[in-house]
Amino acid sequence: EVQLVQSGAEVKKPGESLKISCKGSGYSFTSYWIGWVRQMPGKGLEWMGIIYPGDSDTRYSPSFQGQVTISADKSISTAYLQWSSLKASDTAMYYCARAYSYGDMDVWGKGTTVTVSS
Amino acid sequence: DIVMTQTPLSLSVTPGQPASISCKSSQSLLHSDGKTYLYWYLQKPGQSPQLLIYEVSSRFSGVPDRFSGSGSGTDFTLKISRVEAEDVGVYYCMQGIHLPRVTFGGGTKVEIK
Image (tube, rainbow over all chains, first blue to last red; front, top):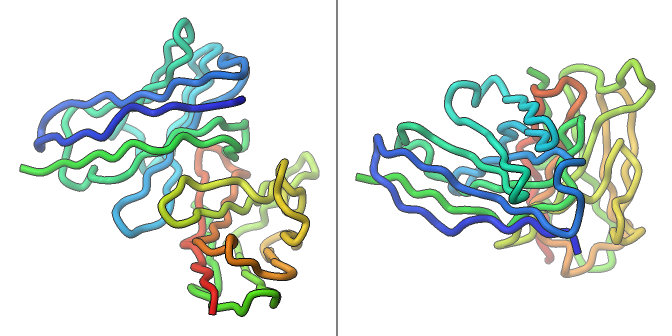
């Protein structure tokens, strides 16, 4: 069974750094993209970017370029989304999903809730 | 960026009745390779989104055949032939023609009367 298991909920203060993870199993992790999607409280879906773990090719939505870093460690079939300095506006649910080269996503993780509050 | 506009914002449907959601894009989603990169997702309450339809009209694995997608260019439609209680949630269209400028529609909430 194809699965993406995301790390647990996080509560952080503004200015802190954070790295959340997404571990794939049940398929060839290096042969598919992994995408990240943000959902702010009570809002819709926002596509953030994708990474191809096979060669670490990474594409960011212009809205998120420079705001987050997407990375992957293919040796442990895990993708990451990280922030160097969190803001309150980063409070959201973040989903990872197996993705394809036109941004579509077929298998989704359960999401990681990130709360940033002083 | 391509703007995806969904209508209506919400829909209340009697079980067994049809439902239709419109999605309009600000630019054509027809790629030079002949494919149209328009997708539909459903996010059920408290769950992650799930892929329903890819490339306008192809149902993803396991999606019931009461769901169908149609359209071309800039105008697209998702239809549910007979709504069931399990179909409640928020439906999103998404375009992927200009990676990484991928955008979602604002969502259409479907509830049961």
